[in-house]
Amino acid sequence: MHRFLRDLLEDLAHRCDAVRERLLQVNVTGPASDLALSAARLVISARRDIGSLLADPGLDNPALVPDHLRLFRRLAERVQLAENHALPHLERFTEHDTNLSGLAARMIAEANIPIVPPVVTASSSVYYWTMPFFYLISVPAGEPGSLLGLSDLGHEFGHILIATPEKSILPEQVRVAVNDWFQDARHEATLAGAPHARQLRVTGRQWMDNWLEEFACDVVGTYVFGRSFGLQHVRLCALLGGDPFEPGLGHEATHPADEARLRIIVSTLTSYGAAEDATAVSDLWDRFIAHQLGARPPQYGFCYPEALLDLVAREVVAQCQSAGIADSLMLRDKGNTVAAVLLNAWERFVADSRTFKEWEDASLAALFTGSS
Image (cartoon, rainbow, N blue to C red; front, side):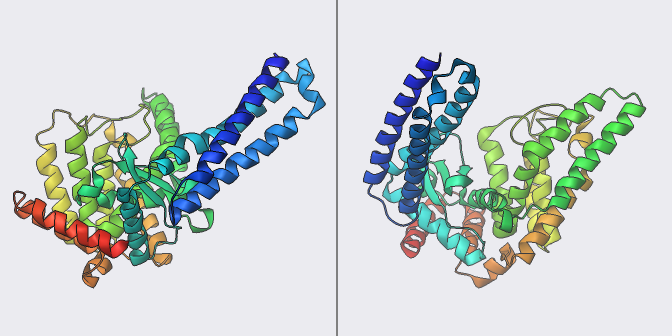
């Protein structure tokens, strides 16, 4: 096996060289150029470590194969990070990507969000996603031609904020509070012999591993884009379908239930004084949910306790305010911000969706021109 491992390392070294050369040849500027350089440095570093391992006499010791195999996998992960995420987007970088990246930079500057402006590409097949390591966001191919969904970039900015320790908007006391809540709930359920004690363990782990960050990012998106983010959430639920109350207690999923996310959006709007927006979002959600087949499960409150959602909303809003990030009310009052345009877009769309497209196209052209 040690001989085969050496062959695998040689192959990975060649792959590093090929990926590095392609990264150095991409013709991009601005944040995209920074992404290319960052990814190239990653594979160059991996290539250097591969060379050191190949030169190590211990590589031929059969007893060390398990250790070397684990090291090989870690090296391969670094190369795949650049190959699978940075390189494909950079080699296919288009005017749409330039426009979106410029718009994201403008959003960040207007709201005073303390992050490096990311590269945004219109190439995702799984809705919006973010790779904070590379400051890379990917959105569906149609997003450069639509205003209604762009407030979801605020959620992705939240992921980058959380991944930046010195600027994270998810304080440790919130993580502690969430962990304590589920520990206490599980303890009480165990003492009472309740059947959902084991399910609470699974759900508590889901909150800590995945859902808490998603909720915090929803707070950031709501804080910056206000009603637009809430209305877009309802639109997205209509587009994607699914039971709005799933995942429920004891279920595993990367994202929490849409209904719980709506509640944290409303709680966020209320917490920084956007009461009218909170009412508008709630009213639309109530009309939407009335036509859904799914019903709220009996133990749903154990999975998404109202007090915990409100706590996350309040604490993350407080962190945003402490960081000097402008909220949607401030951005709307300025009148010429992207946040104000997105709110205007939703107002026009709801008022008359038939004539909306012509206005939307003109507004997009103006936005992209002003952000280039």
